[in-house]
Image: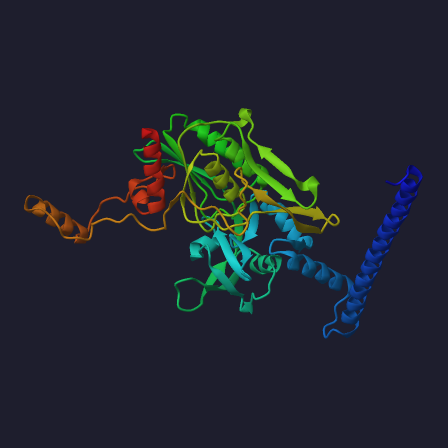
Length: 425
């Protein structure tokens, strides 16, 4: 056993050694940083002096920052003055362009979702489409911000995108006319003859929770609610939390964890924001991303809704806009989202409780299988199909989803049937 004086001497010696080691590591780290910064400065100087095109120092620095952020992950990026302004406009619900949300998936510029009733939607752009070219220029190695800037422009001007679509033998072009995109983030209709409220949320702008609450309260006697998040690319986190809270009274909705513990957050339901306990079905597909995955995943984990459709996109990372100055900003991934069960949606997505691929409800309307007693009536109806008719077309009621529309959408039909089953239970 060592005597106390020797213990103190040894302890002091070890403390000095530890302090020396820390100081040495700190000095090594500092030297390494200086060396790395020196390499960056030399590279910028070489580019400025020898690059084939005449670009100024500010442009080189901007490209350096953009390259750094792009190489971190698919969702981080540098927002120049125009991109920063466009981002601010988009979250307010109105912006110019095609009406299309894109992301980088497996290294390719991929359509997350077209926004309802926009030029891209009307031109036939679909979730999962890969954009190979924009106005004849390749999108290989393009950043999201560069792609968005190429597709946006003055209203009534054309842009051509070349699409690669699964199931198509070769790429094809779509010519689309740009327009001012005004997004109606929440739409509400009643299902004909069913007393079921249909809520369509196209994106999560700053109005979603308020509008959804108003529609739900407008139809308090609805036997159930169908929340359609198909082709919803996401948006504001607080709106995803707010929308979920309308259907749940308590519990964790979503949490986020990052390298910096200051970015860790837990978002829980507040009882005062709860509105309805009506049976709930949620529709998702490959175009449902980010905020819509948080809503559908949280409602699934909390056993509050049956989720129907196809696997969602899989964007579960948190981006924060950090202004560099008044005109420019960085969009940086600082954390990942985790659902109430602790699972992540990053690169995995939300798997529906009931997997249903899009299409019409199968029926036997093309089969000629009829009883003799009904033959005359059947043949008369067949004649009516080819006779000139003066019958008025059925009016398109913007407040109602007809039975025909339901049978044209098997995912929606499954949601209606699920609400009926939940009511029986």
